Length: 233
Image (tube, rainbow, N blue to C red; front, side, top):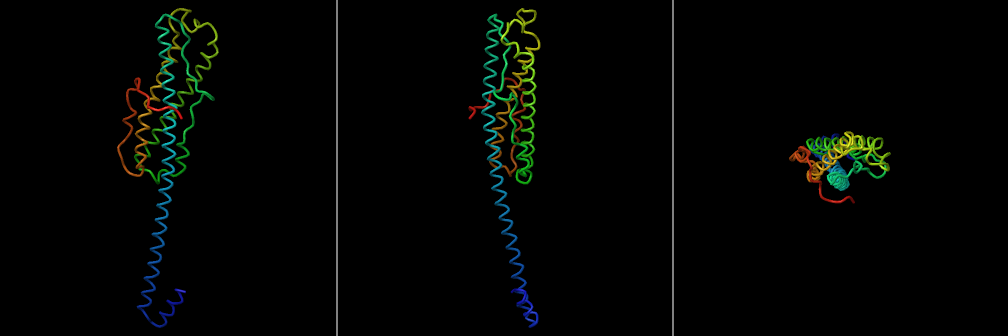
């Protein structure tokens, strides 16, 4: 329809009408592009909101579970140390995760597939990658710990606790001391993850904008860090 009208105007040498037709075409294309861009922006914003909601939920849930881990481990170690200080010979304290005895899989890989690089501030994206990588690394340590107690402790817990001590004496064998030291270390790493994830949750509220780093919340001397507040859901 428009093309036919342009041809008629050209034949009639009505150049002003041809110019108007040209302006109408250009304006229509421009408006169409703008509407498409606005739709894309809205779609990206909704996708970002879904991704952020998933990440915040994952961090909060994991933090609650990890807090319970830390509290249980520290309570168990403290009870062992109190009994040992009283002159008793308790078996070494062990901690087991119910179910598969392996660290839970997290959602970082799935979120990466959702196109995070196009939606989140680059510095925050790097930090999130670092956070999930660190958590996965702690998961590897957990798995190694579980394997060690599976072979060296669990089969003997129903026997005489003296077998865990040097020559049946008062000193806990070195491998069991090391096992409990690794367990304490693991609990401290998990506890230190809590403030980091809390900081990242706040940063995610404005995920597409630059902000302050959260890594300072994690890189401590990993002493007996206070676990994050909250219970597992």
